[in-house]
Length: 117
Image (cartoon, rainbow, N blue to C red; front, side, top):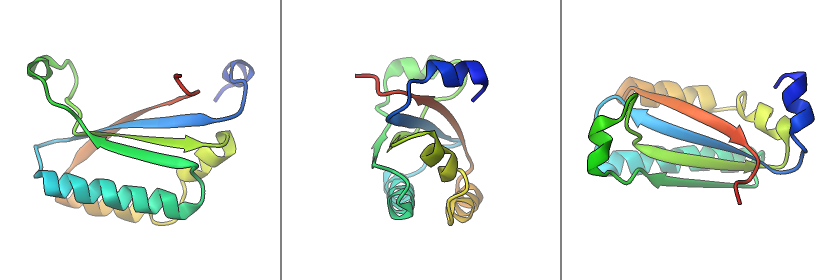
């Protein structure tokens, strides 16, 4: 976060919303396992206040997505920017990513933001 963004961020709760897009469709049971492992990792880290994960709800318009269609969305709620920054180096994260990337390659985009409501 640059100095201008730090001035705009009023502090307090911050959300890290991730959109996960597997390169190829994976069985729902595999996606459930990925989400379960991710939730267990971040919950066990002690860095997050809460985590929510859901499957993407497919609609016909997804066939026209300009970039990729999501497989799932995950949202971490954190107390502050320090906690958010720490999630990028939490123990076990690299192993989880490598293991799942080896089985089912995927891409992730994310947005860091204050609560929307």
